[in-house]
Amino acid sequence: MKFLLMLIGAVALPVFAADGGADLNPADTVGVSFWLVTAGMLAATVFFLVERDRVHGKWKTSLSVAALVTGIAFWHYLYMRGVWSVSWNESMQGLVEGGMTEAEAMAAAEGSSPTTYRYIDWLITVPLQIIEFYLILKVCTNVASSMFWKLLVASLVMLVGGYMGEMGMANAMVCGVVALLAWIYIIYEVFAGEAGKLNASSGNAAAQSAFGTIRLIVTVGWAIYPIGYFLGIGENPDMGNSNLIYNLADFVNKIAFGLAIYVAAVSDSE
Ligand SMILES: *C/C=C(C)/C=C/C=C(C)/C=C/C1=C(C)CCCC1(C)C
Image (cartoon, rainbow, N blue to C red; front, side):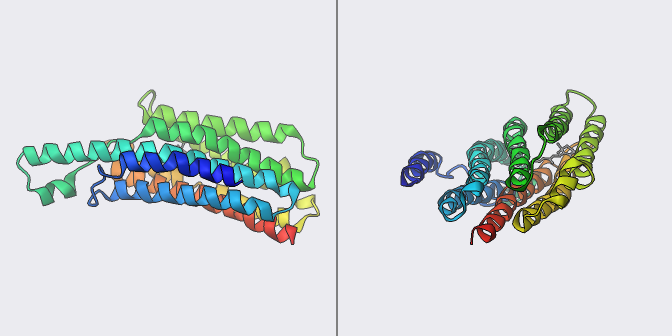
């Protein structure tokens, strides 16, 4: 465990030292939000790894997966912040050269979305969260693996749809609607489908409460993502607010998601 923490520190510190945030302008609000979420993801990762020692054996893998989700996101956020704030600085520089005052340019500057890094992160972390659902059900019932595959396929349709729409590979509105339908199917599965029924019939109160929170996250927490998506497409895309909302959504859905599992695991281990 100590070794793992040292490893994380050893990797993270040079990255910070080299990057150092020197290219992050404090006036770049969206850039600052990337930076704060980066810090939150690292803190959550360390927390889940350390607290793993406190919980009963059957919950340990769930906490490891929660730490993987935030750890992978931490890594991607380092890059995403760079893409955004470097392009933001260029945009601001261009506006100043075009005749604006520095203050005007700061207010008007726009960055570019780190769309590919973001979707690569989601493509890894969303399936990990689906594995997490499955692990929680497994703590108390004999859940069929078909449930896992249904949720996995639906989440892939959702993410591929979103990516194609944002990259302009197909009509963004059509792609957004396809992704929305896939998400609604996931909600249906966890409430009314096999996963929902299995959980209701399980005897483990802690797992039931964790599953209830996770359902809330998939319904309410995940609903933040389409807002970011639809802000970022169309005639007048608002990339700043789109990224701000995606960053908030990741903070809620990766960190709160892990905490819900942690709370259940601790209460079931005492
Ligand atoms: C850690 C990352 C997570 C939990 C990412 C979740 C992403 C979504 C739930 C994205 C959903 C989308 C829609 C429901 C419609 C528009 C396109 C997406 C992909 C943004």
